[in-house]
Length: 262
Image (cartoon, rainbow, N blue to C red; front, side):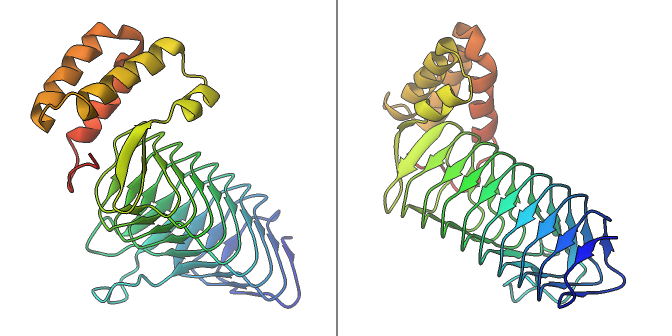
């Protein structure tokens, strides 16, 4: 049987693996599913149509799967999906999706979510990300794998943050951030590529040099965005070891909706 504290309230319709732990005074709603070895600390509320994978750790006072903060939501059975191996600290708020988007808010695997982080409705967060205290996402934001959001960073609705990007402390982000790029400030401005993060993740010197060249085409050459895209295509052929990384930048630029921080 799951280890459930006697003061916790778990709806009999909820589906919890037998290895799940639920702490004092936590509340688990009827449409919740929780995978193996996940630990729910004290005073956590998990509600809505929420699916949680294995090996997650929820610290105290989190609100998981509450109704979206969107006046258009009319009680549709939208969802929240959380993957495996996430650390989710105190006082976070993760909301359900809305029918106006895919109907689901997602968090991938092996993410480190610090205290007071907000994931609004329809956000799509990848894997291996780090959210420092008080990082806040408005609705419909997409965050790629290995991205880092520093403390008090605020992201406008519908923005996209590419993989391996770094968002500085107190940054006000209102446009998209391509993969590998570091931004900071209010309003945000590009500050280079996330070289230290790439080194820690095992990127080779040739890959980093190719990514740096792509950054120069996009930010230091005086080219228009369309001209920069053409230059990136040429750079992809000239830097074979970094070709996949440069392609990721090109693909990202082809899907932007709010322009990029530039």
